[in-house]
Length: 246
View 1 (cartoon, rainbow, N blue to C red):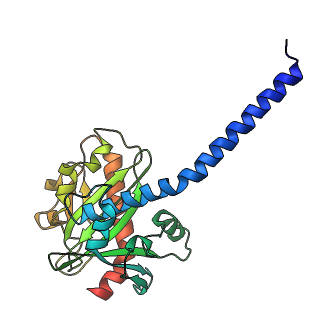
View 2: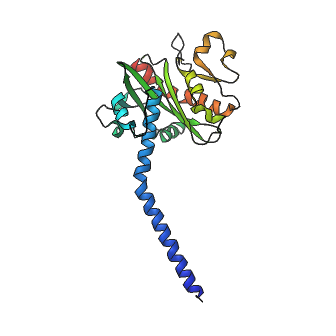
View 3: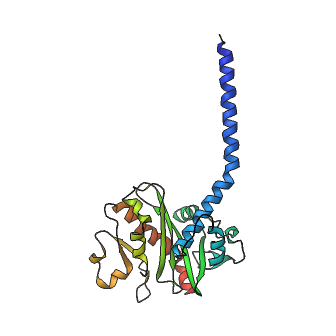
């Protein structure tokens, strides 16, 4: 019969060894986890630009092929603080920016900076703006790709952490994302309109305004509102840059 002291010492040793093993595993796996996140980001950027056939296996070379420039910008002035055009572009300062943290700084009136990616497809420049917002149950994020006129949407990409499958989770679906293609974020007078995600459909908008709107997801009002707010809040931060470079 083992004494209580023996049992306690044995259990303590097992707990310590298990903790040490888990800690070592976490440290060893962290670089792989971070790399997977970076690859997901590359796929999201290339998806917005509508590059076909991008997978986790070829995302890095495709990213380095199609992204010709990355810029870190000052959202207050629209000035470029840093640009990086050499490979590997996944090591660029813009790609390392934590958008969530920068938008947090913005919300708390602290200095912040933003990334923008410039792709070249069929000799045409496309500007990719990353976005981050709040859905019904957690964060939502994505990218919007704008034509060289900084006005017309080439494509979008959305993802989420825990939106309801079949409802809010449909922001990832083609039938939702495809609505954004060809929409514009400025009116004919150069006024910023963003893109409205309209509950009940864009038929509720005036005919001239439908080019700035898409249909909300049925049964997912709060997630649709989150996408709407994400577009407006993030794109507003890029307006000084857009006006300076368009």
